[in-house]
Length: 153
Image (tube, rainbow, N blue to C red):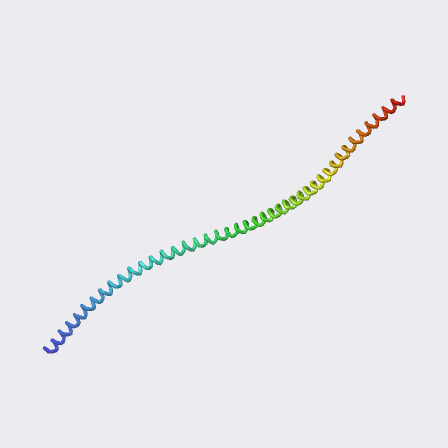
């Protein structure tokens, strides 16, 4: 009986030690569980913040997509307006070139007319000189005639 008692006491002591170890393990597990729950709550909070940030970024991306679409539309309008303006400028340039060519031809024609007029003026001056010579000769002949007429009288 004493041996059984000693064995039972030994078993009891072993069970008691196991129970103490079990309490230590349960306490450690409880602490670890508390840490894990805290970490889980922190991760869930971080997840929520990240989801909110993702929503904000998505809204910002959508806003930027709208702005890009508007800018692309505006760019198209500007390119069209620029094309029209370039067309206008090319037409104006062509008109100016035609006018310049017309003016050059006009100056050339005026130069030719001026040369012709200078030639006619020179001809007129020559005729005036010839007329003066002829008038002088006529006056001399009239004088001679008058002298001959007065000698005959």
